[in-house]
Length: 309
Image (cartoon, rainbow, N blue to C red):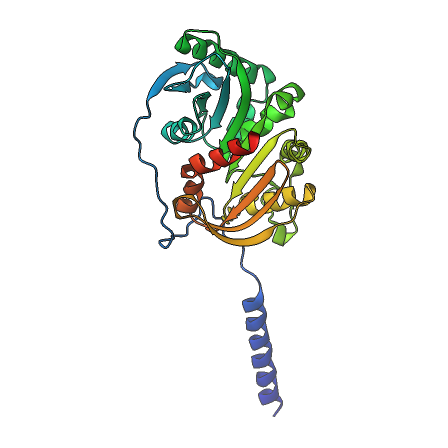
């Protein structure tokens, strides 16, 4: 009888152990890059056709060349409006800038992979000063007359936001920049490193401080800020959903749920806006959803430029 009872107790304990083990959460899998596949949304891509204009190459940081583009019809007389695009194919940015009008010029900067590479490349303020000086010189040469930079807009896709946060940390450059467009690229680390919020981690706020300051200036009407983001969860660092939630809270904004079509078949799910700040959230946790934001640049840049007038 005792033996039978002992066997029964052992069986129950084994069963409880199995249940406990089944309820123990598995480690979160990293998703950098996202392993998911999505075939429902259109994911329309711009074609790599050449837009009429003048192209030159200027010296850039880390020995990387900067691609300069002056669209056809630009004149030096009224001053030019500079768009500096960090990270991504030049032809996409060229199409976006050419569609804005006759006084916009473009500089495209690609320095490598990861936001840290862009941050380090522009952490020394003279690097951006040199970029602006080289751009002015080459635009003047292309137009045959001295060119004055009337406005400066910084665009960062994905890792490119690292350059923007580095540039904005310098007070003189902060004052020079009129507008910022971030395309699914506002990231930061977790603290402790690699510990997601669900496991008790927190966002490393130091990489977000410059954008919060810029956002506050935009709320006062001094700047313009447009941020787009997907639903991708990298796992190894904070997602753009988490960082824009932080930005929304820091700026005292409120997200509004929406259902709208975006460029190229993107599906917008949320928005938060006031004065010169606009934050747009889109569906998607896959690599194609991420690239959608780059190819949506013509629409997003047009939207930002319209708010600068």
